Image (cartoon, rainbow, N blue to C red; front, side, top):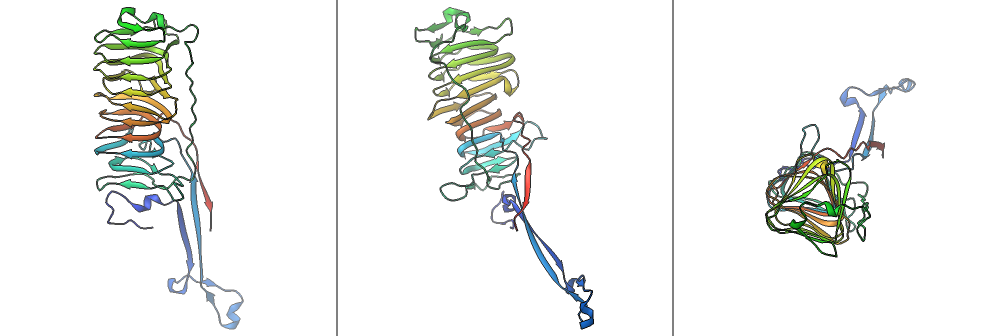
Length: 336
């Protein structure tokens, strides 16, 4: 396999998953194999030429950014990288095709092993560059839903401690609507686990909602943030949003004052959408294996994302935080 000069930004040698080696002992090289008994017949040496092929399989599978069915980047200037030079970007993986447009990836890009009877493809624009391995996967990426939303509020939930109560409107069905300009506090003075449960979460205002970790917020239907407000995540330990319906951050910002692991967003319902769209950097872990995930407009996203499909638009920068430890070894076997 050779690099094709007509494909700028891509080195075809990076897609190789096997290597063939040749062993040659030839007269023209001056190293023929000497013979022991044949010289009595006047034959002093002979030429020998053999080859062998070794294939590499396995290796790390915990990519930083995954669209199980497909990955698609639109616009110019998108980048997938890591927050540490010691980590090679975290990589992009899919069981399907990976269309990078003109996005750059510092790390591996691994498309599917079989998409409708053919190998998955990497599609690149003229300005796209990949620094890592691009061989097709030799295994299927599989991610199961692992979080569940209760059908009703669990015993001992802390909805009644949201402060001040006048800033939210909570109906009998558990719908929470935030006052357009009010600030709301989900307090945690003891630092112990807090649980909240709502049918729907709607924030169309300009206020700040402060959530102190650790806390788990269950939303039976949809999360919608469409105003200019802010959700502020603070404290030690994760704040978890477990949502069965759509997660739509069409407006406002989610500000995580800690590391990416301090905010976990899980979307569990089939055929759902996750839309991340803010004007400040977002730090989170997003687990939505049944959802169409779109990152749009955020100047920077740090953490990791797993979606059924993954789309990142415009000039968004995705940074893997290195938290998905993967020690799955590479294996080399002789195939020929």
